[in-house]
Image (cartoon, rainbow, N blue to C red; front, side, top):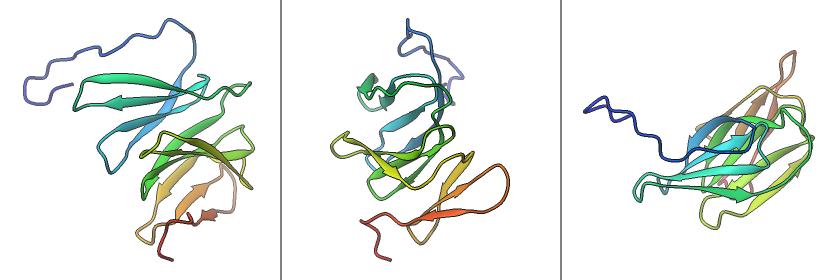
Length: 133
């Protein structure tokens, strides 16, 4: 959606089923979508009007959601996955960080940490290695 003209433009249509659940903007301006049903991470480059899918296949559904940006990485909260999905916006490398599962929201704190919130009680604080803390 272009806020100046209120015009909607479809950048790319996907022929395969699946969903992305949330997106976050990296410091380089690119936007990354978390795979909920898809076997890939969605990458949008608004400057070049391009959409790409970063290959990452993991069986199952309801995998990740609610991304948070911290440093050069985007972190997707695990919903049914057993790990945090991290995308490095400088290299597009995708890695899994074990130790968290069943979360429904994630946010980056001012301290550089990523906070994950489960649907019930408790909070997981993940401090990225590139953080100054």
